Length: 305
Image (cartoon, rainbow, N blue to C red):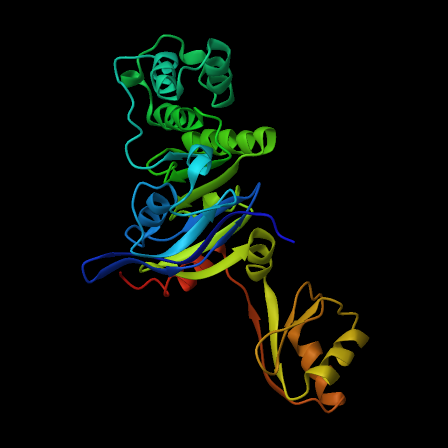
């Protein structure tokens, strides 16, 4: 049985006649790194605000850490977030920012603060004021602030947006440490699938406020693998023919379609074998897509919102 730390049922948020989110139902496993993928304005931030109790749903429900909205009780303290402005005091050090946030939780000891600073990689910042931090350092401090209170779930809205490649790598390494060392479930939004693919275990694609698809990283990788598409009149017979050619990795696609991965033989050899065994071939072609192509297909073939 899957251990979900967050489940939503038809979660919706309307502003007048505008549906920012419409009937979103997701299941996020405990210990997962869940990538919420969508263009700017797709509804990612609205969804995140609702599960963080920063905004009330118009309809629908959700369960967080075994407790149901709106009666979340202790579950509210088990979720940390970095959504929009992290609320950093520019004239204070990372340590003092964390100490100030800790007062909201009744105080946090020095050892705990230094541990958070270490895990987000800000130990070299010293007494430097946060206002002089690079964008990447500010994002890591925002994540550190979200860790005050020892959350089980961390919700991050576009934390890599605007960062250079080095900054993106730093954030990615920080999140991997939090997930692997602390077992924190991470929900992270972005429109940059290429970066999320290096981090996430699961994905939810959102477009125009609606959930288009949920998929695991393994399945996403398989869907983005190059393959030969073979459209025939008899798939069972065609599989036997392919077996005689030494092809083992064959999956069923749409009606009459077979997908062949890792085929060393050429398409001409496949067609010849099918003809000899009286299997009609309607189409054979090499297919495949990269992550960017998959992303655009999921979000409506790149149409404007």
